[in-house]
Length: 389
Image (tube, rainbow, N blue to C red; front, side, top):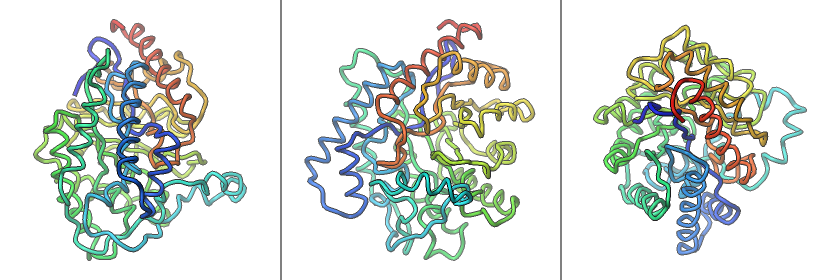
């Protein structure tokens, strides 16, 4: 995994806008409705090529396929793992339901056509991997997308859902314990994790369960019960990646990629110790949004392990405000100061821009403008920090 040796490197968290046509196809696919396979494949191919081009044009150093071939950051696994059926009824995030006036204000946006993450299937049988053809095709599609471009990524990555978020979204109606369930998912996902790295890509594991579940499924439980859950999920993830060099894995943790009060979010400092037990080479964390922009200070009190980099979210993915490059630079500099070494800090986004097809709240053109501002701010920070931009 590359360090920011000559300038602050830029990246993002994974999902990018899919466009209206592909979003509509994704929503239909998620509902079990028929789609024309050739039309779907063509849209995915075209949007992947566009996502790669837009990233390169914006100056992104470490890029990906924008998750164009997936209906969401986690429910894509319905098509790759066995054992799912029926319907879950996942708890709604407590900060959304706390304020009735907020819920009334935002209800129209919650009712638009999008992939349903609250009512995903349950696990009703043994979870097993169904084959590596889909991930092989994703990797090949990304390679095709960047072929012929005048610019190149310094490094490429591929996202994958964590065992813990799978167990949180697909509720358990089969295994006798959470630990048995999450370990079974870890074993099932191991081949896909390994294949991503074998293809020369950095593996990013998306694990919002390690923060968001505090105000979701653990909203009425103690902090210690939640931390036990976090430790169990990290142990399962470590089990799944035990044969992968840690410097080929980065871990994304967040509190939910949605506009809401977020006043019930667990503090980063409360979960930082278990996060440091993850066998990964980088943590990817939101540090731009109003609820978490102060948490760079946690790294002053709890030193980032020597073997880890920090991808600091310096762009908010839930607002159409375009961050000024000077603001971006200030955020990068604070993170670098807390870590103590600017080479160990990359500039990123708080989360994805379209983590579930149709859920994105930032206009597509604004997304690309935000990424351009990310690069411009990283250049400003590079100069201030003594790196050559």
